[in-house]
Image (cartoon, rainbow, N blue to C red; front, side, top):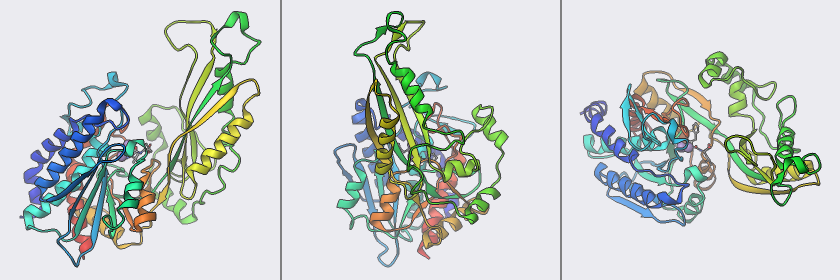
Length: 453
Ligand code: BES
Ligand code: MN
Ligand code: MN
């Protein structure tokens, strides 16, 4: 039977298995979901067994378990390491979900649940593609290793040490990842760049307690006012980040790359309308794709302090806090950027307050070359499945472990994502287009074939 036919005949079962996986609330950042993390790892182990892979091990870590599996019965063929993550983001604000986040429902050809597109649905495609091979032919054209972690959404703190400690086990000729997006629905896409991340927290303390704002107002430093002024100083009028040295290590966009980005179809109007903003805004002299894919940026993710309850309360708050993250591009170091940030924050803070700066987490950016056998095989595989030419893009988001794969395993990494940036990842009503789920299974199956040639 052809692989296409096998996938078509089994699609209802594939989707109901995915729904079972989506029912487990594997939120990596919440302590209360700790046992759900192990349950998810066990679930994946069982599905790998059923797909025909007998060698599956769950490795405990100081955090959440790592699922590792291997099928190595093609001794003279290359080895593919499939990476994915089974952890998901928190669901808040939960009242904005149309249906409960861990009770998957299918509507208009999409499955709705937290983790549907990021990354359970995309990760599961590869397990189903291996099953498709083993059940239609009894074999695989390449050797396969699976590395599925539960800590991607918290910066993969235990994965790099694991890779370092298991270099031989993880040895491979390419790394295959589906945890990114298609350029547009139905358009096969290879992503070759990810941004990095440096996530900081700034706490400003003024008076030793909240004060009556009538009695004291005008005579003492107000941490909320001061923090707002400091944040405002982090960008100049041209939308550039003002931290000294911030741009020093940035790899410049090449003329060719700018030309390629400019050729991709894009409507500023539609883009703005889809997210409900009146106008786009960013660093002067760069297009939207350049700003989000290839330029470093700084954003305040949240700010709190003082009275935020109902109605009015007249105080000078004692404290104010901001969560500030910087997206980085290849060659910028998250640690170094964090230090530059802290130095500047201390420089612009008035003497009247005390400042605490914490580096919460970070991740390296990555640029993955396209002139290797794995990327060429992936492009062909997607063209076979989608019946269209592959498009190349970069991504503004981060997958922190990709740089470590390149650095430690020295294998080309293929980012063959099947999501859409409009599928509400990290937001309420996350979903995954089931047509892309099936095309992803097919693309993965063809990738193994193309890469074995
Ligand atoms: N799958 C995403 C990365 C991504 C985002 C791909 C948008 C395509 C479009 C990944 O799970 C993610 O959310 N990464 C975090 C990393 C962070 C928590 C260390 C990110 O980019 O914020
Ligand atoms: Mn992801
Ligand atoms: Mn994510």
